[in-house]
Length: 202
Image (cartoon, rainbow, N blue to C red; front, side):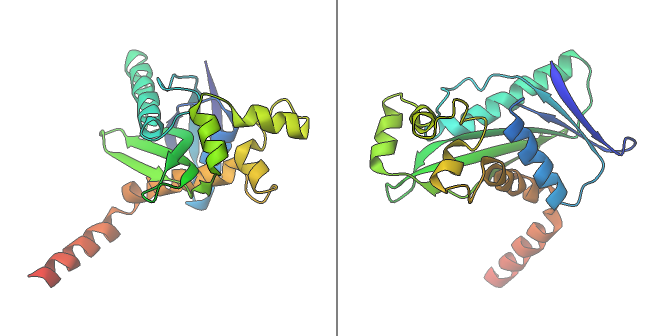
């Protein structure tokens, strides 16, 4: 039902991850490493996103949130404690200028119900790619034909192919996880800045 990764077992952070995809699992570990955490437990579960396998636009965020809601049900039904729920969802979206991108969102929710949404950098797609996706087709399938690899989604993914290996899916998704963790972990800095802005306005 789940994978468990344990480092320095004891009084450590407990995270429920809304996927058993190895890439998403690694991206969470990379983010925790960058944040300086060495003591944590990750429980990874297969849960449904409730959206299409190639989410577009708002479906991406909805998919990540749906995964967290499923994790919350699992925790409640099994009387499990956790510090954070974490779900990562990649998809495709137009920016405010109408340019198509592949992008990843991450939603993290703590045990008190506080949510934070993070976003990765966007990797530009061509109009041809985007319209192909909107028609319900898979870029990974086309890439697999080109490179002769039958499991591109689990390996380099679209990101790895389009950047010729410069960026990996794990590294891009890691940035979405970091982006989501920051508002929860560094609240003091945000409060000080908000207060300073309010003082300037008085």
